[in-house]
Image (tube, rainbow, N blue to C red; front, side, top):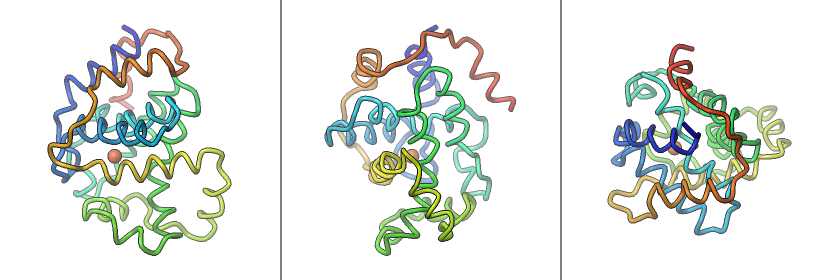
Length: 196
Ligand code: FE
């Protein structure tokens, strides 16, 4: 199975799970985030990152509301580890950094935290809280920090009930056509990740 087929299967099988305590599904959330990236003219790699930023949530067996129960599912690292077998840093780094981008923006933009949904604020508590000045400095020095912050803002806004978006197939075709990706087969990877 190709990575594209595997992504399609993951969303088919688990994409209708609830996005935390938000009113949209994982698939709706992913499509809305990717659509915003595409509308802003982001690179195909960053649009792919937007589509796949929460793929880690589809790879573990914790409950949908894990963060609300005080459990950090580390979905950004799970997603990055899974994606890095197939995609380069322009896809995997914004995925890995999208949680830290929230912690960074809360530390550097006074109005940002007030704009977050209640579940986002709650989950930040288990994700390390607002960044310290040292953490802010380290994050700002990362090559993909700007991409991670763009992705974060799409992530925050991608919670609109009944929002029309392009289809999953549209974005998978875009990835297949325009995003460098290895052809390594992916059978049984999901199972391997779940046991870590
Ligand atoms: Fe998200």
